Length: 202
Image (cartoon, rainbow, N blue to C red; front, side):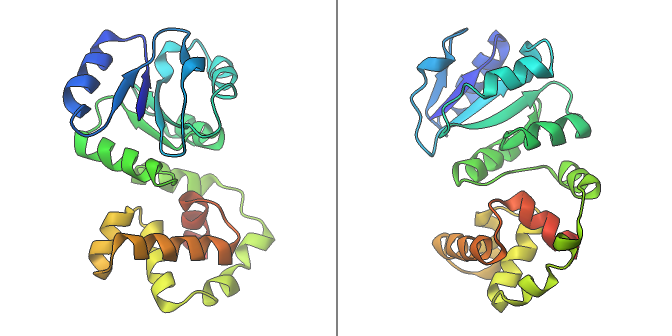
């Protein structure tokens, strides 16, 4: 289920028109977000432009069900703002005029339990992350990965989706997911952003 919470009728109409064939869409009425019943594959598209400030966004997202994966929608994406929202728990951060195919890719990635970032935002986060001595010494950890896992890690760091990785390696999607799960376990990380930061800073 894709939940959409916005005050914009244009956004509601656009999503129902363009994505109803791709996903089950449910529009959340104003101040009724607490009624959402979610499982691990549910996504919330949240229009950040309807909030007055960052504090009100933070107050909102802490009340969301833990299983609901939030994606931020904004009129004008900004790198610093996007990085902050990802840090606060959003699984993606996209502009409202983003190409439909890219939006679908982002949603599919989030449904898979991962974070999706457009390349500029990924680069910004990597550049501005505080890398400590422990992180910079993690090259030894990558050596513990199999050759195939190292390939998958590299593709993830480049921003490829699971489906794109499966195509490049000519393997099943489930195989890619197993590799990623193994990589996360071996590197003691939880998501694709952490993996990208690790790979790109070694």
